[in-house]
Every structure is written in structure tokens, then in C-alpha cells.
Length: 112
Length: 114
Image (cartoon, rainbow over all chains, first blue to last red; front, top):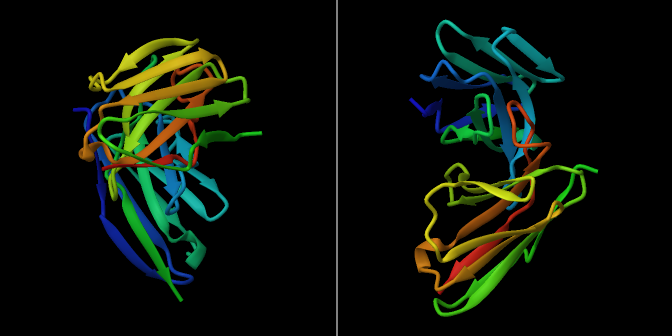
């Protein structure tokens, strides 16, 4: 119930294409869903986050789509660039002093 | 300033050594975290401090000993580690440790235990 399942494990996208990473969860108590981006040798950095009261959130080229009934959320990267090549982690948490539950990560490679 | 700093960047230690990792933030955050990250895996939570008190210990072996001397500093004392403890150790901080807070991660300390 504490798991967040993330797919795919790795993704190769052409420059200018759309990258899509999916996550699914079981625990309906989760109500905060962030995405983190991690470059090699660096710590994860918050990219964008959503709460279940909205179905979509957009920040620049990055969009989170949230489907509460399906218990799924996804990250879309529009106009993918080589600089977007990194590992992306979805995560979830719920109220109280509770830790983030991370997905297993998706390694994105954007090729020119 | 949204920076969490960690020292050292790299550390090599033997199984009988004692060493410490240091983490610092000046964002006024009252929650600080230690994570362990193995290659190609997500970060695994080890400890959470909230208002300088240990609030979560995720069943971490006693060879890892956290310390929070003040609200800006977090240490992780290491003693008698095993080679399987080699990993990237990440520190993070957030406002108070509550719901929906952004956690800001440091760059990590890459630890190799020989």
C-alpha cells in the first residue's frame, strides 16, 4: 500500500519529442505528488508537484496529469531537450510528518 | 537561497574507521533528513529530525548515528561500516516536515567503504 509504481524504467526520446513517465499508487491517503529530477552526481531537485484537487498542473515544458479515480499520475515533458536527460522520480506523501515514498525512477535520454 | 550543502563530497573509509558527514542549510527550515541512495535506485529515508529532535528512524543500523546540533546543522556519524554501506548519502531539508512540503536536497556525499 505504501508503494508508488513508476514506468518505464528507461526512456529514449528524440529531441523535440514528448517524454511521458507514469506512476501509480494504491494508498488513497496520499495527497501530495511531487516529481524530482536528478542529474548524475547531484541530489534530486523538485521539478513540479500536484495535489489531488487538480487534474493538471503545467510549469513551462513540464506538465503533471493526475487521475484520482485511477490512482495514477504522469509527467509529460514537451519539446524534450538533451539537457533534460536525467533520472526522474515520482513520489507521494500524506499528512503529518511522513516521509516521501519514491518510485523506482526513470532514466530519460534525449537524443539529437 | 535554497541551498543545502554537504561535506565532504567524497569519502573513502575502512571498516574500522570513524567518520562524520556534515549537512548545513540556512533556509530557516526546521526539518532535516538523511537519505541513502544506491546506484540506479531511489533515495531511501534513514532519519528525520524535526525541530532538532529525531522524529523518524527507519530501522537504521546503529553503526549510523545522526546528530542535530542546531536547526541549521545535521551530522551523520559513521562507525564500523560494511562495504554494502557504500552509497550516495543525501541530506535534505524542508520547512517543518509536514504535509506537502518541498524537500530540498544537497548534492550528497559519495561514500566508499573498503
